[in-house]
Every structure is written in structure tokens, then in C-alpha cells.
Amino acid sequence: MRRYGKNPDEDDVRVRPNRKGNRPRTNIRPKHEDAAEGFVLTVDRGRLHVLVEDRTIVAMKARELGRKGAVVGDRVAVVGDLSGAKDTLARIVRVEGRSSVLRRTADDDDPYERVVVANADQLAIVTALADPEPRPRLIDRCLVAAYDAGLEPLLVLTKSDLASPDKLLESYGTLGVRHVVTSREELADGGAAERVRAELTGRVTAFVGHSGVGKTTLVNALVERQRATGHVNAVTGRGRHTTTSALALPLPDGSGWVIDTPGVRSFGLHHIDPSRVIHAFPDLEPGTEGCPRACSHDEQDCALDQWVADGHADPQRLYSLRRLLATRERREGD
Image (cartoon, rainbow, N blue to C red; front, side, top):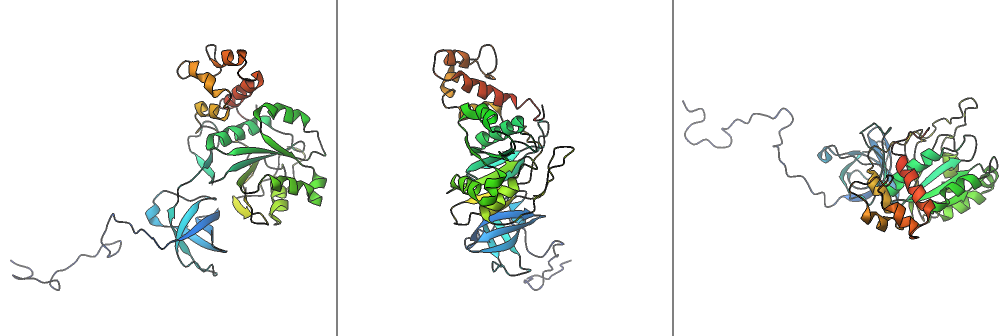
């Protein structure tokens, strides 16, 4: 028995509605060629604040991106209401290719990578010389992460009015890491901010540091904006987390970007292959050609010992390399 007759037309055919909508499924995704370019400033509970031209808009990730997310520092393509008016919402439809990705894990046993920031050029590692005491192992871990991500490290030492920086700087001298030393008095009168700002010109710089080291206070002085700051617990010697999400802020003259990140108490390196750390030591890397396969560069047959003995590199450089490699097996509190 024919349901629709001999020659059914479109009006005769019943179409069963799709429970998820009446639009047919397709693998063809829109190209959004007219999408505007944006720069992710911060991410807050699934809502992203994005700079589009001279205004900040609120956007959410489009479903078509799947599990691919956007983080602070990402360059994105945005469609929808781009006015920036209150209660408007745009869509991020594309995340552009990244020039760098700074990652960390909760600890060395955690396989889950957390992307801290994208497209940064420089990593400013902020540590106090006292109150709280400096943690060289945490500094080492941040250096390894910076070298792995292709970021140039900058060591910023705060509270020099409480302790001398000489011992700490001597420890990192052979690594050739640039540094700036500041005091609370210099920070108050603006001199310290000017010296640090000179190292940030023309760069996107991510700031990381242990809670209580004065990182956010320094960022406030650099960008002339006030984020909440905390204090150091006199009993535990630990600072309080006052920055709860990463935030990108422009320097006053528009010559660079500062990305303030939440204070960290650990910096896991589970995601980093120790063999890549050698790339940060161009004076030692040629000497690895004679190393046995899968050499850890800290074993009896490592060719780097002979390379240094022959005068091709400073012995302290080899010591620094091995110290950084050892952080992969050590907790930063050790």
C-alpha cells in the first residue's frame, strides 16, 4: 500500500524532526572569514574577556572548537556582538596558531598538563630575597619550563632591603639569566618599576612566582593598576593567593604586555622531556654528539665530561645543566 501515491511531491513527504534541531547534520564547518581578530585577556568560568581593536568584549567558545580551548595570550577569531556593551556575548570560532606555550603540571606525578599562557616571549620569575625565603628549586623548575617553551627567562628579585641578592645571583651567574633587583622603597618611588619595565619593552611577559613574593605588587606598579595584594603568614612563611586567574595587562605606553598569573606553590615538570633542556646550553650541546643513546647527561659515560675537560665549555655550565635536569626528579621543597 502506497503511503504517498504514485508521484509524491515535497508536500506529501513527512520529515521526522531531529530531537536536537531541524538542521541536518554536516561535517562542513563555517569558515567565518569575516571574523574579527582578538587577544584573550583573561578567562573566568567559561567566559573569556577578549580585546578587539580598542574595546573589551565578553565571549564564549564555539561548540565547533570541540575540546580545544583558549587561554590568556591566545590570538582568536571572534564573531557575534562585538560592541562590548553590557550583557552582550560573542563567540570565539577559531584559535590561531601559537608561537609558544608555557605549561605546568600540579606535580611530577600528574600527567595532566595545564597551559599557563600562550604566545609569551619572556618568563619573569619573581622571588623574594626574604619574607618568604627564596626557593632555588622552584626557580630551577621555572627555568626548565621556560627553556622548554622557548621563552627567555628574567629573574626578578624583590625585597633586597631585607637580604642581599649576592648569594642567589652567584648561583645563577653561569646560566646567563638576566636579572633585576628591587627593594620595597624603590618600588614605592617608582625607580624599581622603571628598571623592570625596561626589560619588558616590545615583549609579552608572563610573571610567575611563589605566593607572597610581591609579584602582584610589582605588576600593579608596572601597569599603574590595582589588583588585590596579600601578606605573608608570620607562622608558616607562606603568602596568600590573591591573584586567582591569569590576566593580561598592557604597559602604560603600549610597548608590551604583562601577564600576571596566580601564585604557585609547586611547578610540576611531568610534561617535559629532560632531553630538550640541553637546547638551552648551546655551548654544551655540540658535546652531546659522543654521548651514548638516551644519555641522561649525568652518568659515567656522558661525553660532556670530556667536552668540558678539553676546554670547550666552563665546568660550572655543566654543573648548572645537571642541576636543572635533576629538578625533574626532585620536589621543589627538597
